[in-house]
Image (cartoon, rainbow, N blue to C red; front, top):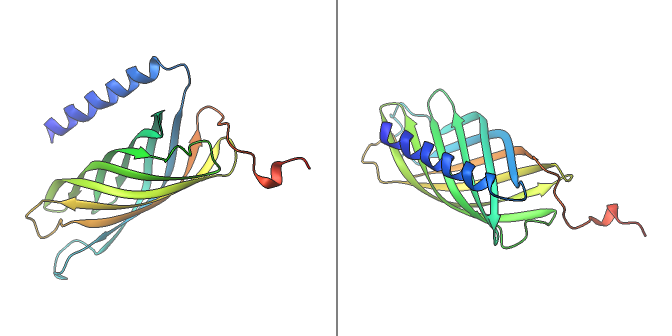
Length: 178
């Protein structure tokens, strides 16, 4: 756990320094909730099949060519996850609806065990204005843990996000002057 904490702080420090050298601030922060659907074949485990987490806190930093770095933390009484990943938005980051793919990793802790997972998923953001949007994501967390209480599982999240700087994006049909 201590080694993971040091790596997380190093990545956070490097991403902060990269942002400080950028001319445009492209940070987005958000809050929401998530649901982990554990894929356990053993119903006698102490871990529930569906685990609801609130709040989910995340921050995303857009870099270039549709690539962003995303980090989030979700907490509940029986499930904790700290996630990091790279998003690819197909070059649509200025659109009103921005679909994306995610590849990353998580530190997941459930009662009696913890593990690192390899994550793959997708989602989308629907921008309601130049500052606020709705974000949804589905992630498959592949665990190599031998523990019965933490197997590979699906994770679903939904939240509201806020752009630190106003975004410029394609004008919606109802916003155009005809």
